[in-house]
Length: 305
Image (cartoon, rainbow, N blue to C red; front, side, top):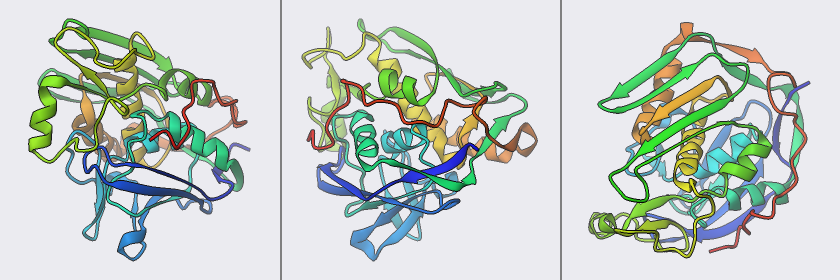
């Protein structure tokens, strides 16, 4: 049986909020079948915010959730790591409104999940399988899902920058491909935008240790982890944002210049189009095998920051 999974034991890390600049303690805790992924604010009486599109909050360069006036921000990198590692049910405890940025990628969270271990539960995993195309567009930004026998992402980006005019990548998302090819890709920004962001109370915790910074002619960081690290990170963001539909998706996601606002609007659109998909119980033929993959050399310690 392709069973639901949770983490085997409690595990914690400490990091900095990218936009708040505050120190954050994060703990992953096991949860029962059909519990889903829920964020728990320990600093606010253990109020919980389930990671679903119904709890979407304002999107400002990151994905935020809110329920009963309790919010949690910058959830996308952790969500991408959890769903790609097949974690269906988990409690994410935070003592601050923002998930720590760590090194700007999902690799530290992959490390954390490996250290916690993965526990198979007794209930079958359910998937949202796309039966007909769904799409949404805003200007030159667009995103769509097409029927497929597995989860695959095609993403393209285009910027008016000499190093970043156009990048495109297609990848079938499995545990192994995500860990090795997507998880290490870091978030990025442009030097010209940093001051404006900080004047607006954003990126207060940002540094060359947790983001790629692009100057006028090149990258201020020492080196890129991949030649096309930028589009790989966009795939990472899309995987995390799509997790908000509440089920692993079986379909081909195709996006161009989409970003968090369109990703999350699209996740909501998917659930509205009830005739475009069906809920199925998965098997090993439709998804990657459930056995955990080996931790790659690229993975970063959760205490990187």
